[in-house]
Structures are given as C-alpha cells and as structure tokens.
Image (cartoon, rainbow, N blue to C red; front, top):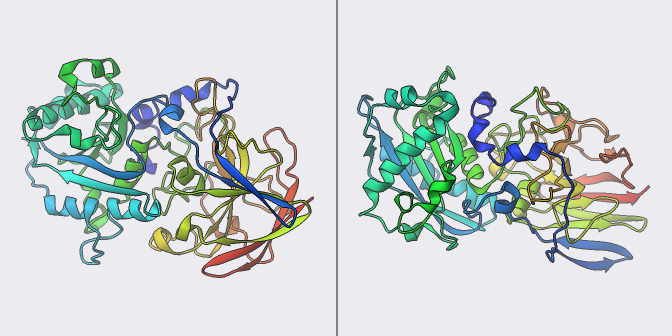
Length: 453
C-alpha cells in the first residue's frame, strides 16, 4: 500500500503479518541452499535462495515471482461515475516496454519487474474489456463497513469473473499449475479517497478472504481457486498531473508475491528502532527492491564470507546483477537467508534507482536481517508490530545505531570510500566478529576489505 496511508489499509495485506507477532521458536529448514569454496584460506559460500513465500506467509497460491506469469487485469466501472478510463494508458502503465517520455513517468510494471528480477520474471497483464459493476459505488461503501472493505472488492471481483467465464480459459492464468489463478488486478474508476474516509477506495493487495469458499465450485473458475488480487484506483495512474504514474501498482504487485511492507504501519506496537526510512519500494514506494527482498523472490544469489584474517573483494553494483555479501559470526547454511545476519550491497544511482534517487551518492548499504521463522514456517518478525524488525539499515560506523520510524533516508547512511564499519551487534548484544572498509568505488563496482576483529 501507499506509504501515506499506513494504518488504515494493512488489515487485509497483513493477514499473514498478523501471525508474526507471536514470538515462538525458530525452525531449521533442510534445503540445500549453499555451495562453498576456499580462496586463499578464506571460506566463501554462495547462498542460493531457499525461501518459500507461500510458507512464509502461511498461504497457498500466491503469485509466482519467476518465469512467465500472466495476470488478469479487469477495469471496473461504476454506473454513477461519469468518466471513461483510457485502456490504452492502462496498457502502457502495465505492459509497455517502450520508454516514452511523453507518456510514461516511470517504468511500466512489466518493465520494472523484468529489470528488477534480472530477467527472472516476465509479467504480462492481459487487460479485459471494462466491466460495469452491478451496483453504484456508494452501494459497496454503505453495505460494507471499513473493517470489511475487502469483502466489497471480492463481491465485485466474483461478479466480474463470472461475467468473463465464457470468454476466458482461466487455465491460461495458472503458470505454475498449483491450482490457483496467478493473480487478478482490478483498476476502478471511482475517485480515490485521499481523505482516507473509506478504506475501499485506495490501492491495496489482499489474499482471498473467503478462504473456505475456495472449496466451493461457485468460487472456482475452470476449477482454479482465488488468492492474490489487487484493488486500485485509476487516479493513481494520473495523480500529481503525471501522464502515466506506476509506482503504486509496482508496490502492490510485490505484495501479490507475498512481500510485506517495510514501513511501521502500527507505531503503537513493537519498537520504533529500525526499518528503511522510505528508501525502498516496499517502504517509500520508490526505487528498486533490496537484496533481501530479491533473495526471497528467487532473483539473485549472495556470498557469505568467512575471512581467516582479512579478504579484499569486489562487489558489483547491485542494480546490475544483484550481487550482495553476507557477514555473520555463525551462519547455518541449511537455513540460507532465513536467519540473522548482515547484508552489504553496493547502491548506485543507476537502473531503477536513477529516476527516484533514494540516495544521491553511490555507497555501500548495510542491512541488518532478522529472518528467523516460527514453528509454522512463517516469519517471526516484521517491521511493524514486533520489538525486533525483520529488516533495518545501519546508519553509523559503530553499527549500533539504526534508523527509526520517523527517520528520513539520508546519504549519511551509506558507507563511502575510506569509511569503515568498526563494530556491529546482533539481537543478543553480541558483537559481529568482522569489520569492513570501503577501499574504492566506481560506477561498476565497490572494492571492500573485510577483516576479522
């Protein structure tokens, strides 16, 4: 969801996140998630992503994050709304690969995810003819209160899908053959409620609320069940007088895969220490995804380095191929990315970061990850309601100062040439056994020396 409406609209998205507040024991997976080699007596382990976002969210049938994936996009019209949505503009926003400065402010959703995934994901949004809902828009806000806004959207979705049933083979929308429609987008023409009175009229992602109805034939289409869907206003496409604005839809698409928000949407619970200070697509709705998110999505591999004394390594620009380094005292290779550690990625003002410029300099970004899981396989921590956050960014050289939920992103949070991380702590207050120094930065790569303390 958009970062300026945190609290109201996370009710649906965090169906999985609600389960993250009960801190129970972490479990170990048995996936073969790494391969190690020795270089000058230093152990370097390649970490192969081993995350299952369905399991981490406690669901089945979330939108696949790799391969060729077709998403059904249904424009929704309400009879009381006197305007026409431009379907060609919707197509540009979601599918166009031709950068046209006259019509496109940012990348299309398809193009963004093709670049962000390093070619591992090819989304195609198949846009249907506009469906006119059976009731005016005010019916849905009067019939459903704010707590049940998702059921209003699902009533509209079921209507639209039944209308399309004789025109579409829904089997074309199950790329991984898991028995679920890969994903559904609804773009509605009712004005977005920027006053935040009605939760329904915003942009949000949900996992099908009528879970028990997935077993009922009336809620299946070509025997496929429903799960990930987005309900978003057409206004986001043209807001702030932009010709074709796509950031909101890009953010929501990541939720379809099962990626959580990284902003603090409930400041009354948990700690305010940590987070990414709006410097991420899943926090500030800008720029690229970070290394942890991409690893969850299966787009890149990282290296865990265990220096015997010290090692100097080159780290390619993250936007180019997703390189990142993991440092930790103890690292369970079977758990892979689902444990506690630090990530080093080389942020550059290039690729998907060039337009938004989350930072205006190049530098090393240090992320602190607490990705332990509970007995049921879901995340133990999140960035809102737990005392420890899932993902945070270190801001100072001593490694003990983190962003807070009121901190804005700053160039000062990046490590530049000749700067060092001299110490960092884990959640149990033990110190990281390693330090690093940034030796050199170019547009293509960073050279870093990691040393044992």
